[in-house]
Length: 96
Image 1 (spheres, rainbow, N blue to C red):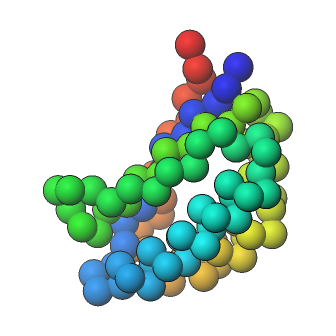
Image 2 (image 1 turned 90 degrees about the vertical axis):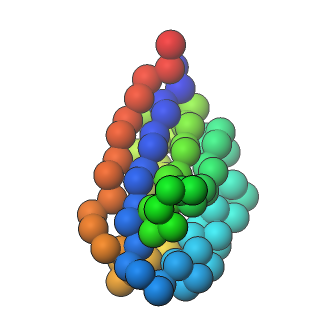
């Protein structure tokens, strides 16, 4: 069963470009290195420019767990932390 994830990220005003540059590096690394990641798509809200949504899909639970342990995820996560206005809101979903 595949695992779906949404991550809602609130970015500090005036920090969009810096945040986007780091996140785009993360997207490239995930798609290149994580075979168990089936989708990793980065979006900006049309209603609120400070809100970003990441749509993710993993082949299984082990692929999801492996994602959080990767060097690229941890490295980019530390760099992005200074640009976030709040804790990310993460929702996990099971495929039907």
